[in-house]
Length: 102
Image (cartoon, rainbow, N blue to C red; front, side, top):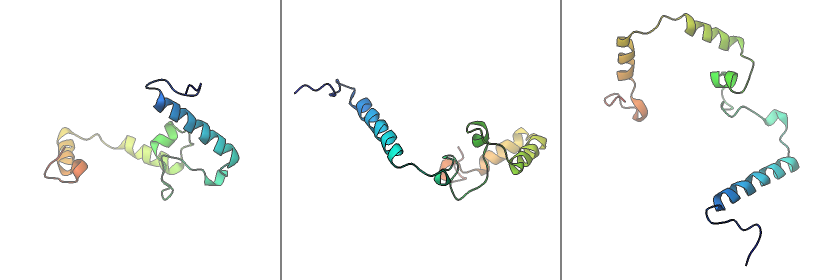
């Protein structure tokens, strides 16, 4: 059984990915999402706080609140090595255990 759509050895994952992308495109044309349903993938729907990634990567216009927070961070005094070490020891890392800092 020889079919022109049959992938060569090792190309099956690529073939599946291509078919999935084609199907997503086809379904997107059949069932368009209204603009009111669209939202940024980097912000959960329950939060409205703008993030740096949205401004830089998604080209969103920075809000006044975002610019105010950025200005406060820029005007803050730099942290010294002792303060950074203290914060690192207090942070529990991925496991949340302060006794085993990362």
